Amino acid sequence: MAVSVSQVSRIESGDVSTRDALDRYVTAPGGTPSLVADSGDERLRVG
Image (cartoon, rainbow, N blue to C red):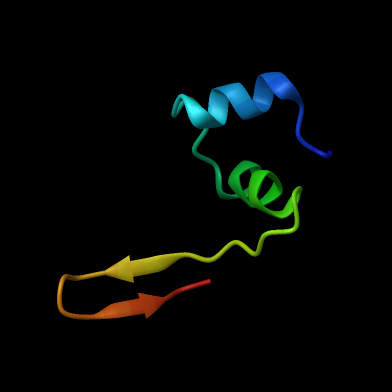
């Protein structure tokens, strides 16, 4: 896995918020990261 155990711990506790770190965390087990802007009545997929 490209994400260390300590990095996972920091992500899960909210200490890491960079997009790159979160992308690696999601893709490590085979996930696909995406960014969604939700304005209540409308959702826009940003990335």
